[in-house]
Amino acid sequence: MVKRIGIDVGGTNVKIALVDGEGKIIYSNSVPTYAQMGYEYTVNNIKQAIRDLMKETNTDSKDIEAIGFDFPGQVDYKTGVVKLAPNIPGWVNVPIAQMIEEEFHIPTKIDNDVRCAALGEMKFGAGRGCENFICITVGTGIGSGIVINGQLVRGAANAAGEIGHIKLQMNDGPICGCGDTGCLEAFASGPSIVAMAYDYIRGGKSAKFREMAGDGEITPYIVAKAAEAGDPVAKRIFEIVGTYVGMGLVSVINLLNPEKVIVGGGVAEAGDLLLDPIRKTVKERAMAVAGNSVEIVPAELGNHAGVIGASMLGS
Ligand SMILES: [Zn+2]
Image (tube, rainbow, N blue to C red; front, side):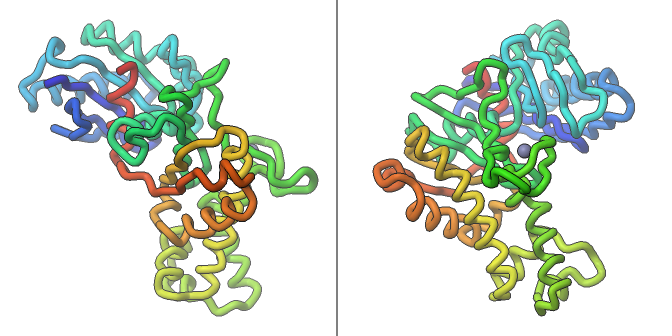
């Protein structure tokens, strides 16, 4: 049976998994990133984690078809270089694929986190059997992986898929992390849910999420729990956010006519609270043919999408 290694590098932890040809995780582990120690330190930890994986699973280099890495940031798929990872300080122009290949003599590929998630969903999740789909992740930011004719779309400079920066407001919009204003992400990501929640509280609305958060901070998770418990303000917040995400998707659906939109990420764990207003907006605002033929569905691989998708790079 073919086995591949997937490695998901985040700001706090590096997750590593041995994945079989059916997308099943045979072994998984995680090690701290410790980015502040410099990238060489993290790379050495990753190499040790690969050696540990081989030892624990009784495999060696010839049993492993490929290694794939997933990074939250800008990567060059062709050269295997991490250009910039904003949440992992010090990772600028790091030739990670070459460093790993020299050590283990196993073909190594890298890509960004949303494209790896899309690849995982295409091979083993909600995108199985689908030739044209968008995998959107709604969390702290909003990103997407685009699959057209069964292929991931990377673009001329590996920058395709930035759905979060579709402009929803031409002038005087909220400031976005990208430096521009009026982007979808500035209206509808996790932080905007929290900002809306505090606005409602300041406006004097009695809201269950304040009580549920106790002395702690309000999080998108708490607002979702309050909405599930029937709190009208929390439900309204998800309706607004879902409508914004739907409006962003309308442009993409009109442009690309996908079979499916797969919705994942932390905020999407709220399920139909987020998906229903997206579906409603797409039905009302997309052009008829494209709008009627698209299905809006939840992602299936959850937290494992990163390692599973990364393991399939280059397959
Ligand atoms: Zn932006």
